[in-house]
Length: 428
Image (cartoon, rainbow, N blue to C red; front, side):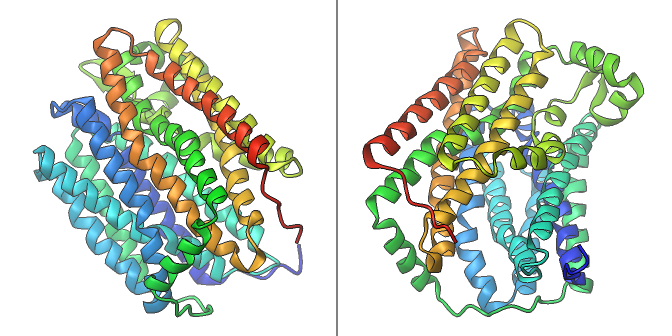
């Protein structure tokens, strides 16, 4: 497209920073359950930390975006690094539950400060000719970092967990250097709204009880099982599946050398698949998101969203079967959940933006944090439930419970739209 505006240098700088941050964040998060259990903590303990970690990660952007608008993206980015880097290193030394919980809370705080700033930079450095390409590149960078982190950290933890934390801290340190040397404040309209004004505006949006109820439904029936999937899957694979057999199966498909190099480690003379390397959806999204988006871009939002939830629920069912029948089904289960995620997540966020009055689209998207935080804050309960099912001898029941939870959500949202009516989307 010859008339597409070229991206400025800060666009590429910001996207490179995003790769390293997601690398560090997901590199720690995806394997954290395995690490905590190694220290002797229960799945109930893990669930508590996961809930507070995710909740603070997705609550802080409400504040940090407004602060960055007033004081500058670069300054707030540096503040996030100064919280991020030492807190990651503290994981090497803190082994008590309270110490680990406080450290993970600080990491979540730092990640939450960082989270909206790169997407805001992308928004500020794109225009009508290149915004689709710009956000496509950004989304690709998010998933590239989120995929690479668990791959690398999975291999490092086989040697020492300290190497995981040093590597994550090194990534944050590199981000700090890149930001200090190359990040230039993007040109944009400076927002002067205070936090108090933001809260008043959000209160106005949430005074629409129908919209508020809809957000609560999304939190309980979309975001809760969504976060639960990422909270428990690495532990589920590591604890309940024969990862040596998984290694043999994958090696037969892609070759032993590639499997060893990418997603496996040798433990006590036996090669095993690293659970965190295959328990996320980033690599699937990189390959299939564009294809899925093209299929569903012209279809109605809510039916598409509910279909995505149904496919995700089928993924949970397959993951349940993978423990009691054939462990290799885990790949199909993750793939189906990823397809459901790729359909549901973009469509529901787009839907919320387009049901808002045009002048309040940003405000309505901001209120989406409520749904995300409801799901994040409550998601840890499923890690605790998994521990109860494990004690009863049926760990696979956790996946069937999540599938049932998702199916109830489909029914609840369908009934909501039937009883109260859907929201009217803007046409322009």
